[in-house]
Amino acid sequence: MNRMLLARRFAGFTFVPLIGTLAPLLLLPVAARVGGLDGWYSLAVGQSVGTFGSIAITYGWNVLGPALIAKSKDECVRRSLWVESLGERLLISCAVVPVATCLSWSLGAEEYRLFTVAMAVAFCLNGLTPNWYFIGAGEPRGMAVYDMIPRLVATLLAALLVFLTQSLWSYPLLWILSSIAGPLAIQYKFGWPPLFRGRSISDIREGLRKRLGVASIDALGGVYVSAPVPLAGATGSTSVAGSIASSDKLYRFGLIAVTTLGNTLQAWTLDPHADSPRRRQVAAIFAHCALGLLGLLALGLVGEFGTALLFGDEVKAASSTMWFYGVAFFAVSVSTPLIRNLLIPSLKTRFVLAGTAIGALVGVIAMFTLGRTFGANGVAAGFMLSEVMLVVVILPPALQHLSRIPRFSAGVKQ
Image (cartoon, rainbow, N blue to C red; front, side, top):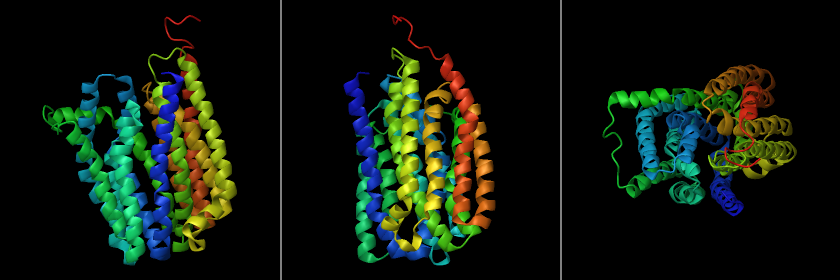
């Protein structure tokens, strides 16, 4: 892959997610002020529960899928992977959505329980996203057409309707429509390939079994990724949960930079025809470390002001809370190339699973216990620990595998 193509891909993978990320900045500030403290908390709880549900529904395809697509140049193979993934995810959603419905109902503020359920269902359907396919294929245009544009239209329209009606309901309803538009459009593009023809129950079960390791990693990671807002509500007041919700939102806006960099570099790093595979891996790691440090400083220094500006003084985050989220940002950025470019492609998923399990166990316990004593700062500190523990566990095996990658491909003059 030449430098011009890499630069073009970087621009595409930067622009497309950036537009999709900035669009909610037009909606969430309006929603925070229209819904008040209870509405903002319920919105955040529904998103958190739905986010965990979407992670369960993707069943590891967002991690393993891009690598499978990137390593295959056969369009028929790529299409069969898409069909297989969509069928699996639809089946899993039938089990996940009812669970998310019950959980979000129990956690939502009393007057917003039905709305909380709607938000959870809407964000569960994020698990049907086709983005992983286009990331592996190195086609940011596909991400724009089949995912970003439908969500952008839904977000802008929801912002207008929330403002005009002073009701939050248009947000989950339009988000549900945007979530199913992309997969339907791809099915149409591919000629409506049948999802289960030629696949027996044993074939489906075998496919699920093969991806169980990666799916378990994702699910365990989803536990602590989605836990801060619900645990803040369970251990403290609604105001504490509202503050954590604002911290969490700003943090996740920042994570789009990590996702963008990871998406841009993955196909380049894993290119089987690369002349110097180890150098590309090292370059990706250093790029993510630099981004992580930049994000840490940005969240710590301007995070409190940013949440006040975006979501209002009533639910703004404390500066100390944002420093904890800043360290978590650094840890996520560092772990991204280690997992996506080294451990997962080399099938060393047991290390990622162990790190994620330890991070989830330590993080959730810390969020609960520290949250009861120190409020929002305790929850944020526990969340930070979960991400740091993951890095501590996966770093040694990742670096060991990196040392075994050849400096030059076979046939390249050294």
